[in-house]
Length: 113
Image 1 (cartoon, helix red, strand yellow):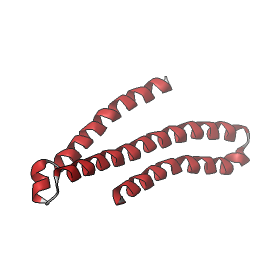
Image 2 (cartoon, helix red, strand yellow; image 1 turned 30 degrees about the vertical axis):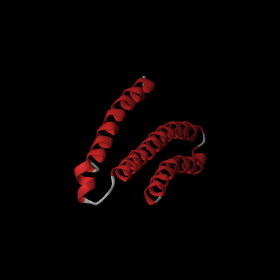
Image 3 (tube, one colour; image 1 turned 120 degrees about the vertical axis):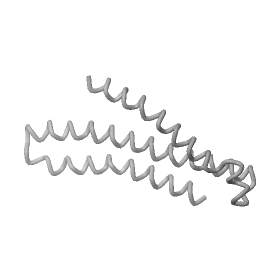
Image 4 (tube, one colour; image 1 turned 180 degrees about the vertical axis):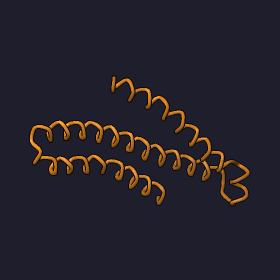
């Protein structure tokens, strides 16, 4: 039952991501490019950069959420058998959260370049 909920939520995220991408693309429309003195090829490059940034953050956030969900279930299960091990399992949850931070760092690197 848990996997069916995850699949349903993934199906709702991708349309939201496409709407965000369209909003970003409309902000770099031809009229906006003319107003900002940006050529059309540069505007296309900038729009692709925004799409890549949103994809990197979104995919890494989804992966981190999935990893934290799986690791926290395993951590609670192991803590029920040995309560003294709970402190060590929190380290693995923190490592899984680092995946989302890596996606944010990639987005910043794309933005800078």
